[in-house]
Amino acid sequence: MRLCADLAVRLVDDPIVRAGITLTTDTSTLDTPLQDPYRDWMGTFEELASQAERAGETKTRVKPDALARFIIPAFTGVQLVSETFSERKDLLERVHEMWQVLLAAIVAPDALDDWLAVAESVFTAPQSSTV
Image (cartoon, rainbow, N blue to C red; front, top):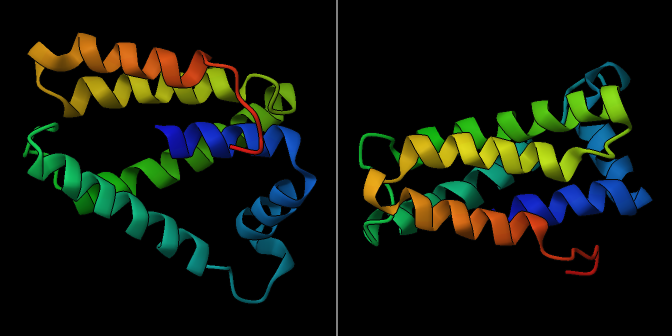
């Protein structure tokens, strides 16, 4: 969640990050779409999801690799729609909503309230693009 929150803030505040995301998501500007950033992000999220699974923090029905392959495109879609509707002004709020849905799907019901509280603190705490 913190990685997504940090990237959301950077997408709003940092023109270099915005340019990088534009290069990654705008496949019309390159002969071959950039795949390495997606691979890197999915690898990072797969490792984090594996750690969470080993720690018993997630349901084992959703495998770490599948979760990573879902989170990264979901974030990409959320940020593109936020860019379209609000020039990303609501991006942090939309990513928070994305995580609320994800948490309901991947954590045990008896732990959901605790994780939703963590999400609330991650996405509503004062953010800085220098995190």
